[in-house]
Amino acid sequence: MTTGLSRVTIRGVEQTDYERVLALIDDWWGGRIMSTRLSRVFFEHFGPTGFVAETDGELVGFLLGFVSQTYPGEAYVHFVGVRPDCRRGELGTALYERFFGAAYAQYCSVVRASTSPLNKASVGFHRALGFAIEPGNDEIDGVPVRRDYPVPGESRVQFVRSVAARRDLAPTGLHDLLAC
Ligand SMILES: CC(C)(COP(=O)(O)OP(=O)(O)OC[C@H]1O[C@@H](n2cnc3c(N)ncnc32)[C@H](O)[C@@H]1OP(=O)(O)O)[C@@H](O)C(=O)NCCC(=O)NCCS
Image (cartoon, rainbow, N blue to C red; front, side):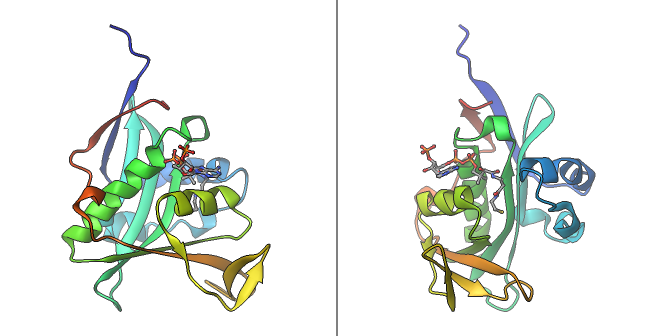
């Protein structure tokens, strides 16, 4: 029976994924130059907390994060991206579920992330995932932001969410998704 569903596989990130993500990240961010912020370090040293999603061998999503060395019970998501034609099909959610599982396995109970206040899609996405917005030291468009973060002159909305529930853990690496 033809279902119209395509199978999306989510697996741990590998070093060779760096070039693949580098080649598409600016496009996926709508032309915003993110490639200069994409460090190979995430692919070399944070393998257990990085994931890529593929369908028919093509990259359709990725998430890069790490466990905080300063706060051992906390994990941080640095980048999450889904190919534009695959959005709103729960792939971003599935990538986060894998990350929650990895963070939980490393004894983390808190996950943090941050995003530009101009990135309304990311703000909506993180809110939908159950993240709360942390109080900041400034406000942009009515949203609390941390000023001069992560570098002077920039501001970020900061998110926090607990990872306390078993239901956060994705059981397998295979997801049947409608989007791609
Ligand atoms: C943010 C992003 C990763 C979301 O991926 P996605 O696969 O579309 O997300 P999901 O389908 O799992 O969305 C889950 C929920 O989040 C919310 N959401 C997702 N995209 C949204 C948007 N553009 N506006 C408002 N809410 C949104 C919705 O509530 C959605 O549920 P629904 O589709 O049933 O309404 C994707 O839009 C993306 O890659 N954007 C460009 C890169 C980026 O900005 N990354 C985040 C900063 S690092």
